[in-house]
Image (cartoon, rainbow, N blue to C red):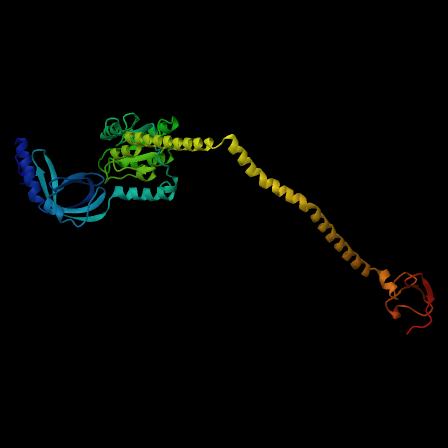
Length: 403
């Protein structure tokens, strides 16, 4: 039926117009293929899967019944870009229309996931996700700070876990918008306030579960940088176990849920008490053993034993002193004798090297008028005056003949 064929003055009931729309849609689109991005992927206990297909300008609800879901050859998730084939259907009680999906295939990466992957690569290249810059969580924190919605399920879970593990732990809630416009700015502001005033020992940043779009503020670049720059150790607790955000990588620790974050941050009071009891027992036993050892040691120190001990220490020293005193004169004599021998040897070497000793053996030294030693006959001429030095005295001579 075409809308143009309807009388202009006809009045429909809600049921009638809904039935008419249902008939037109379901008969006109018995088989249709729609491409879009998955959002709010929600498997049910019965095996059916409900989700939304969307693009930049519109969205349509979708359902995959159990039989078709079992035939899927991949695991879809929020942000995946897929191509769904099925039929349009109208749900009259709520006036909604949806596509009943029979088959689904991957059509490419969704816009949101692609954007997040590009941002992740950029921030990782700057070193914001490096393990060596992550800080350890304090073993005994006194105050836990929580940046989240003050009315959300996340803070209730954290408070319940904290109360169960350690009722005396202080919790400071730094209220923030956790989705939608302005969320990233308030999250960053709360992190800055916590650090500026040093409000806590551990800072949990997170929220409960939600669609990929709901969790986007925790992947904003400003939030990732604020978490990385925090001087207070941080735990990222965004969504449920299958959810993720970029601040998970820049935080010092990542918790799969807000409850798990509280488990990480808050030590069990019973464990602390048991550790203290163990330390007390160990310290008491150590003191007891040392006291007993000292008591036994002191008991052995009486005047008689002290004198014996002193004599035992003194006598070897006295014996060594007496032996050294007796050996000293002989050692000095031996040293003097060795020095005399060395002096005599040195004197002999010096005497053998003396020119006078050479002259005494019959040799003489001949010099010219300039006092230069004559070593070669060709260096003088006839009538030159020469001076001859024998072992004793001096001789002056004239050169008569040169051979």
